[in-house]
Amino acid sequence: MDGEALEIFNFEGGHLHNLWLMPITESERDYKIENGWDALEQRFEDCGLDYLNPERTSCF
Image 1 (cartoon, one colour):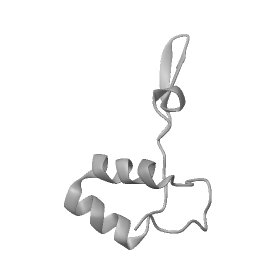
Image 2 (cartoon, helix red, strand yellow):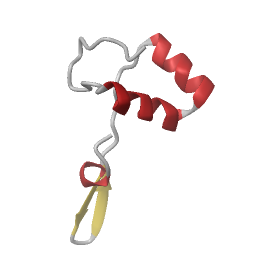
Image 3 (tube, rainbow, N blue to C red):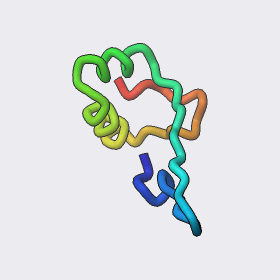
């Protein structure tokens, strides 16, 4: 969600991909199923998702 700067770490001899595991609400899951991951990610950006807050409210 913060782009390649945090996703890909290049080092001598290779690279490492950091993958995010983030809990989502049922309504966010349903939106993703209907509209795709890119649409859900855009929705997160539009609503200012605080993905570091485990008690965050839904973007819907």
